[in-house]
Image 1 (tube, rainbow, N blue to C red):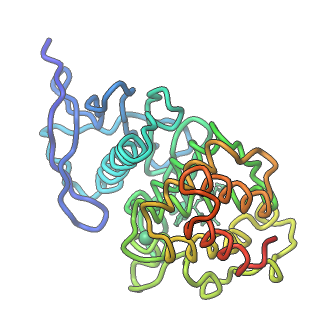
Image 2 (cartoon, helix red, strand yellow):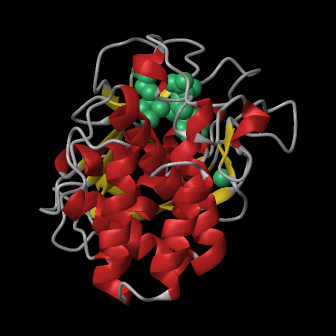
Image 3 (cartoon, rainbow, N blue to C red):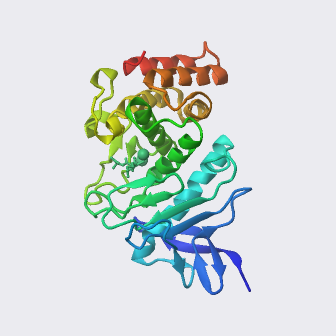
Amino acid sequence: VTDAATTGRGTGVNGDTKTLNTYFSNGTYYLYDTTKPMSGIIQTATAQNRSTLPGVYSTDADNAWTASNQRADVDAHYYAGVVYDYYYNTHNRNSYDNRGASITSTVHYQTNYNNAFWNGSQMVYGDGDGTTFAPLSGALDVVAHEITHAVTERTAGLQYQNQSGALNESMSDVFGYFLDPNDWLLGEDVYTPKVSGDGLRSLSNPESYGQPSTMSNYVNTTSDNGGVHINSGIPNKAAYYTISSIGKAQAEKIYYRALTTYLTPTSNFSNAKSALLQAASDLYGSNSSTYNAVRSAWDRVGVN
Ligand SMILES: CCCCC[C@H](S)C(=O)N[C@@H](Cc1ccccc1)C(=O)N[C@@H](C)C(=O)O
Ligand SMILES: [Ca+2]
Ligand SMILES: [Zn+2]
């Protein structure tokens, strides 16, 4: 039997061509990447527009993944590999559990599903309805957002409600930015495909998308698990100030260290400020301009 790791070619959600790590077995090609060091595999499946997970492996006959209904599969697979490489190369983290866990993605979840999520075991992507969203795996910052939920779950464990939940969401957005730093927008590559230049959220200007950016405008609500997608604007704005001041290279070190060393399941915004300051102190000193930039950022969003 001639099983083998192979290299394929695919078309992404936005019509771009990508090289894919695939696998050939028994006459069929699979979105099954065995190339990562010490890690498990990265594998992509389709729910075939139903809700059963993980669904069935995405397959192709000739390793040219160019059909229109394969675009979401191509990007989910390719971007999962990009995010794996980021955590491994930048933070020396071997997959979301730091022990080489396999990364599984399922696309074509339900019909016109305008969301993506981590379900505790895998990533799941809807195709969008074509107006609000294009297939959500088509954006690297979305894929990074979802995998970062898995990292958070295995480290800080931030409870998905109220302030800890907004922090959880913010960490996913901030690492979404670190993966896709071309702009301060989140989801711009798949959000409102008929409208250009917008995103679902903005780190630099949360208000432009209906989020608060100061503690004084924190939204007390029972919906959305206590407004986790609303109040994330406050830590997101602090991240914008921090990154703008000290740059991406130092910021991502501080954020990774705070997330994996100091934050806990019940951390609130004030605890996040302390965690980031402690990380900045550990890495750059408590009298450093880096430390002072982090403190200033959180002062400016009104978190003491
Ligand atoms: C199914 C239950 C809800 C899970 C929410 C997931 S983690 C989530 O936050 N998804 C992101 C997807 C995303 C990420 C970055 C950029 C664009 C879109 C999200 O923000 N979802 C919005 C639509 C929401 O759930 O309100
Ligand atoms: Ca982006
Ligand atoms: Zn999320």
